[in-house]
Length: 160
Image (cartoon, rainbow, N blue to C red):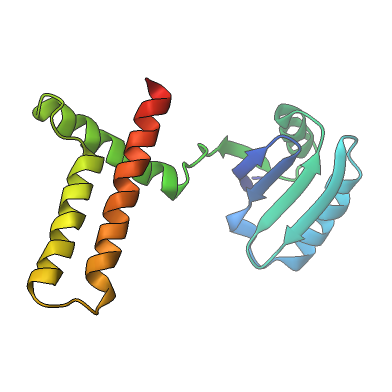
């Protein structure tokens, strides 16, 4: 049975695959590099036997590569993994959901930037009340509160 290759990342002209079952097999990855480099449509091949990865720079269809690899007994492409969203996009989506919920729950009276503004303003006022005039906490909180408010206002102005 041929080793299983999983596509872990793919953008036009570049593809990374992992063959976990052959991890550490230097001879296998050296031979694989030579065989794949000889294929029309492959510009460059980088392999790393320690991680079991293959990095291909190409201008060919994924299916053609999978067919070639299977016919030559190199590996079988199992499936490509779904493109993972960057963490920043997941965080932004979470905050957008919270903002939508907050806005709908308060009939548009309060949104997340307004809540952040009020919280930061309150933190700054609390620090002043405690007599903490010299510490950066209160004026930093005011600065952030102002920034959040201006950013929200700027976005709303450009949308409407």
